[in-house]
Image (tube, rainbow, N blue to C red; front, side, top):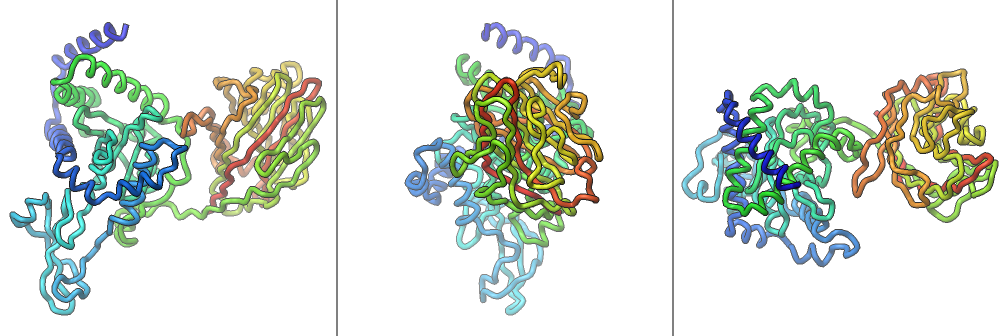
Length: 537
């Protein structure tokens, strides 16, 4: 079947290409020119030079054997490059007297400088002796006491240490790397200048870049990966005016076929299957990927003035990470050990809750992010809920199908419901996640009439196994993600004016916690809270 699909696809592409003419050749030529540059990163001389600089043995000595070794080595390479090897230079010291210099001009590289792939030379005049210093910007290697700007170790470093890597060209003027993780079976974003591993939304959300085209190139393929680095595709699409989408897709497929023309048929099929999986990931999963806190930071490399000039300093957010050692326990709730809290035992008619004892000030709040694992044991009822409310840290709601939060006023709840209470709550299914809230003065309710959004398209919750979850709540809504391998995939996104439901500004303090209950049927509800972050403007 795979052979048939592969052959039909190739025939269809051949027919399509025969009927499409490329209208924007300058832009495509620019992509082709950049893409051809990736071959130099596999030059044996350059790889050997990179290995001379990289402390690879130290990385292996420091690697945790419990984690994926290959991915760990790349993470250590990123950290080393950013924190030990790379130095950002705005204006170099005078090469004659070591005093301060000021920018003078940009000149052509000398033959010696070109030998080491200098793409431009900046000149600086000393403020003391007034002599000129040359500062080549090297694409590939260091020479003398000049630091290269970006590429060699940053880009071919992963290849040098044995990883499969490709370079991503960003049409708004940045370049970074992707590494293929055999452990996770996907391409992972890497940026050595930022010590960034798997933070693809860093540029659009953290730096505030208006991305248009992000094209990945390796020696075996070329692919448009823009959807991995953006969230709002319709808005991005409005900025993509350089070339028709069908032209770009066929052009990149042409480049890929040219690079694979000497490969065996089996190798081509293997790479094609991986390419199809990636295209599905880009189409279906990227938009659902949960935003990480470290994707919201501004650019770290470069001077403050330079970052501000480019508008890449990011949002000025204050993060508070709350201690997770002490909680207010209510009802049937008890702490099993330092990390696990049991909301209910496998006993009927129980209601339990726990809250973080420190309230959250809503005045300048930007958002709340909580990571936790739930474990529901047994096929009974009813489920548990993540709760943010502005009543007090000692409030306990109704039990049974109300999951311990029903009846609490000024409350937003994300319920993980494991029993279909059709008669009393009109539940959509016996396995769903739902966001519930009612505006003051009405109390919250688990009845489905008061659901602001829900999903039943999830794996079973009551498995007896730990299920890892992330909830992000801000002024504009609630997002819920379930962990798949090492990333959270969004399963629910509900828009609501959160502060209205919490009765702000009349109530300015909120408490964060969990509730659960059993009724005529019972099950164990356990929670392991791993991270609680509060963000302020």
